[in-house]
Length: 258
Image 1 (cartoon, one colour):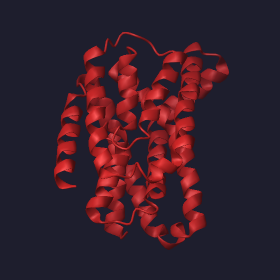
Image 2 (spheres, rainbow, N blue to C red):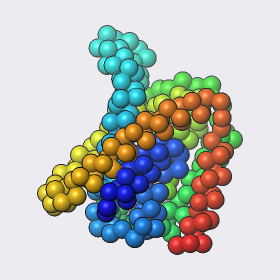
Image 3 (cartoon, rainbow, N blue to C red):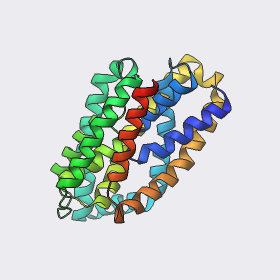
């Protein structure tokens, strides 16, 4: 992987992590298109996701500080949000541990990405059609949204797409579902990213390609910030239908080209 390819992967990761189009799916397609060796692909992708987790931390720093202060001070809303994030993280962690080997082999397929892009589109469409946007977040709803996040372990489903859809199915507003989904992604992305970072270090890949991976991570961080800001503003006044159309179009292209 050269510098240009690394930065391109970083930009793709940053933009697609927070848009409901699947960052992992896009990275698999990009690697296939560029003819890159995918031996450590999942590990490098996790490191790029770690950079986007830092983007979440920076963008939502005020929210996170208020959340911590509220939990310490006994604020009911902060406690609900905090516990919803904790229980919502459990399904993704459990599924990730069970499916790790499958994620590194079976799930690294362009054909699979095409199918899950289409399947995820149907979930997004159903969520839009059934959304009431009148309910408030609860701890049990946090866990349910966590189950949707676990679906995003399958490339093409999209972490943000599934968590936003889960929130809409449960009656949250688009903006509340989006903000909660982004915050919910933070623990899992950090955990998997650090684990894979150690894997790259022990294998020597991080030393051999450290400069390229670092530049790719910076690109992912900066483009991730832009994507978060765009998505938060977009869902206030727009539906998810444009992303449904994009996903279906991309799935068709993948089937034709790959």
